[in-house]
Length: 249
Image (cartoon, rainbow, N blue to C red; front, side, top):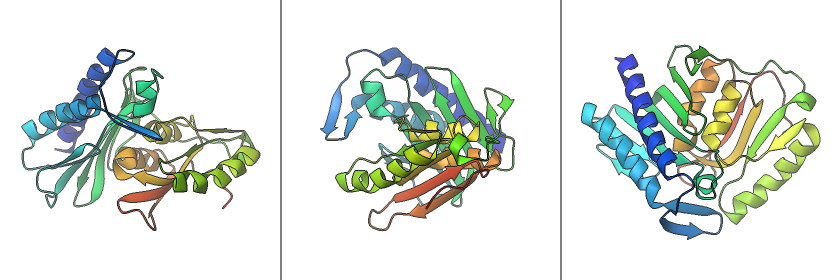
């Protein structure tokens, strides 16, 4: 049955990706425009498309997504969805964004899919299975020296979280080969899983941004530390890395 769940997640991600490609670079309807974030009408449409496909096959399952929840959240099965991860990139026609879909069973992530529709790259994994990128097995980087590593530091959307991230970013800039802020958490963590990045760090992230990626990184031989945020409900700090390098505290 788990392979059926994986196939459904892949199909839903590709369907949403087709929708996003169609609208990329075109005028978009903005629902909310905040200081460091944008919410698009297309975010909701993408999640609705994903929800419809999933719940059409598994009506007893729950949806926990960036654009809302559906179904009984006490269900054994809960789909964790980010319909456009990297909305600001998408809005500004930067082709670096993704759809992230994970499935939790009794709180444990058992399926993870991340799809980059602009590069047609899809990362997929099931619990206990082999992590794949476009059907080929992946593994984390073998680099061992931080001075040779590329580290991505995510910055959240509030002034407090931005201020809290700047010292870490400065430390990484001085220590790593390169430090990046790329604008899509799910792609950052997928890049760690396939060895393009050596680590991804963020101080305040939502579960839908990273749920699929957590399973990918761990299956690919890396490690993930996810810690509930001290003051922001439903937010986490995350350190996802290859396991081959040591990061400064």
